[in-house]
Length: 177
Image (cartoon, rainbow, N blue to C red; front, side, top):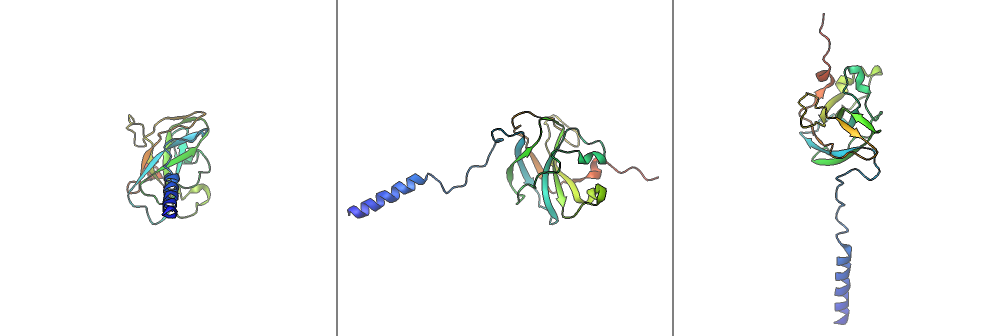
């Protein structure tokens, strides 16, 4: 009996000592200590297109005024794609230099290689979602984000694969003559 009780006590102590050690760690909800950039949650909606190479988060110090301004984002080149699967919600961090940013945007990229001068960017890139200040009613949803010495939390938005916009949505081609 003593051996059985001892084994039971040992098993109980071991089980209590695990303290849920096999459960996944809770997802982060804030920028890590000492991080400089923006952090938030992206929520995915719609079905990811089969031709998806990746989804990237980038920021613009000023909203692009022309197609040529589209490569003025930070950080350049963009960081790695958000991790797949592109479903549900996930926390992201985007390292950025301290400063003011007018547009934090998710960019969907189709599988393919850019032509010289990025002349095929309209066929490879689409805006899939962006941070919007609740008071902003513009089509591009600019919301001013200021990054200081610490991380800027709460820059969250929806990435909607069923409502993506090509570059020409923001910069229509000049009319034909």
